[in-house]
Length: 366
Image 1 (cartoon, one colour):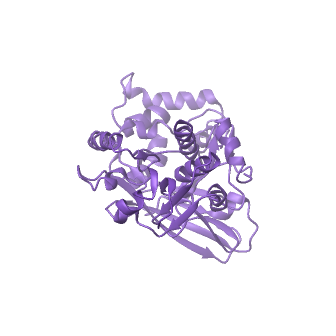
Image 2 (cartoon, one colour):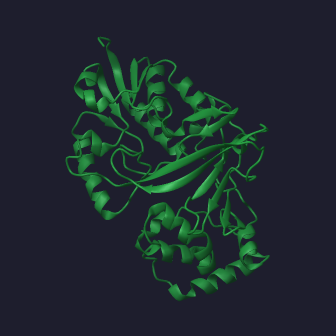
């Protein structure tokens, strides 16, 4: 452990790997550490029965950022996968995102005018007032029927709280369109890396020294002394030993199963929007790469309350946590350490935004 590095990068996920690749390309020596026994963070994929399985949930790359898209193409080919999930409510299927197919399945309407009229009638009770919670926001977007069938129970399972107690902004990013278009995203580029994300991250880290199964925080001083500068991508509150208390998250538990059949549900992502089904969705991984294997692999996703020691997935964005994060951010500003990524910044990040943020930080540093 006598080697000297320009950068110590804590976390081999997408942010850390992008930053490490840019630093290495700029002539810097980088050491990358990760607690897990693999690289890739939550985008890690592993091959099972010839199928690339997204161990930590579905990750579909989509972006309208041309620089980010061209950057990612350096490390692998992306297929033409289009995310068109299906919602299952007590055995009845609906197309997502909410579009004319959904509205026809729900009400039998056939024109955008009919759909808008139906929604307008169901949201009339709110008038012009600003939605105060997720329930009001959802009804104002898609009406009472769709909210009760496709939003309410699914969201309450996901967040572990009544929709009336959740902030309205959670649902604002949900697409609603009055065309027969099942493409969940409206970005100009979308796809899944052929051969999985792990192969892409391997290429990003090719010029770095990588050590896995290492807990940086247990040996912080020892590892920090190896490099001129540290980039930390883990939980910001943990870095500072929870001195102000713990930030809150929701966690996710996965049950992955190999099935001796070619096709289980006919779609990569199926959401289960009733309260009785304990899991939120089932991922059938082979459909991400149009697989023709004789077997299939599915993962059931269960949303869990988070406790320290569990994997943190979704930040609980409320006033209490926002104020707590700002206190940690102030410590980070004065620490001399670089912080980046969803855990260090306590925010939900789409993958392209992770890459963009890492590229921007790398440009600033170089």
